[in-house]
Structures are given as C-alpha cells and as structure tokens.
Image 1 (spheres, rainbow over the protein chains, first blue to last red):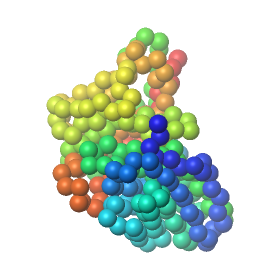
Image 2 (cartoon, one colour):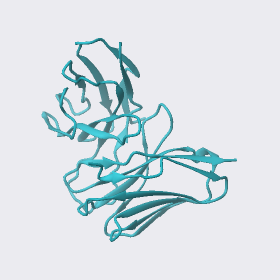
Image 3 (cartoon, each protein chain N blue to C red):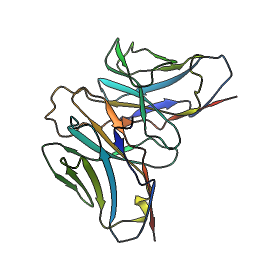
Length: 111
Length: 118
C-alpha cells in the first residue's frame, strides 16, 4: 500500500506564478520529509527537506510546508521559472532509514 | 567531482539470464540503496546497505541480489527469478542515520539504468 501519495500526476503553471505541489502520507511515524526534482534520463536531485519538528522550511524560491495533523506536505515554488519544469517527488522516512517515495508530479512552467 | 555513477545506461536481458547493474560512489557515504521505478509508480526500494558486508531487503527484493564488498560499490544482480525486470533502476547513497535530529540527510542518486527484456 502506498504510504506516500501524490494525487496530481501533472501541473501546469504560467511563468512567474506560484506552483504548489502536494503530497499526503499515511504513516504518522514519518519524521523526515524531502522533495526531489527529476529531469528526463537523469536521477532525482535533492531539492529541500523538512523534519517533523518544523512546519515550514524555505530555501530561496522553494518553501516546504508540513501539516502533521493532516499528514500533508506541500512544496511552493515562487516565482515559477521554465527551468523548474520537471517531475517532483516527495519522500518520507522514519528513523530506520528507509525512504518511501510518492509517484511524482510532472510540473510544466509555461513561458 | 563527487557523485554516483551507474552503468550501463541501457541494458538488455535475455530470458533466463542474470544481469548485473553497477553502482559506484565517491562521496564517502556509508549507506547505499537500489530502487526500481515503473511507470505511474514511485520509487520502490529493492535493497539497501548501511555498512560494508551488510545489506537488508527492501519492499521488493524477490528476484534480486546485491553485495557490498567495498564502501564505494553496491552492484545489483537481476536474476532470472525476477519475472518482470523491465524498469528504470536507480542507485542512491547517503550518510548513515545516526542521529534523527540531523536536519539534512538527502540521498544522492545516480542517473539510472534502464533494463529491458529482449
């Protein structure tokens, strides 16, 4: 059973606007969450992370929000740029070191 | 530059054949992982290793085998017992979890190997 879910397979956003990618999880023991970005024919690259002791983490144009009560994670990209077009995966883990990945959301930023 | 190298990029397997996918890292990471990606699915963990000469099964280990004789290398063998091997395989590495309070322990990924059946 999928413990980390990304229910939107794709998202299109105009350049300069905000992109919001969502992720839900079922395991309340998850204490570390990450977002990865993946271009075609390449491996995922780490984007931003958040631990369960926080509810927000910012890095430049990227902000991750964590709502533990709702078991919901979101990634905000502001402003969106054409180079942000990629597949975004969320992932979660608990202490024992195994990561669980969502199915990915393909973001297209339209110039 | 430090990183993870997977080879080959494309691999073809005949029925009944074992094939081995290579993964090498020079990041001095303790932990290494193998994932499989199928269309419409997330990355699923096949095997992982936290230290040399030790490895654990992930969620879909059946039909696969690994070895960890050196810290830098974590090859994956897709055996003939794996009946549906066509997929994109990703290797990753990370520093070992030794303190859950650490705020940033991402996995670094290679560029993957695409395995197909002839």
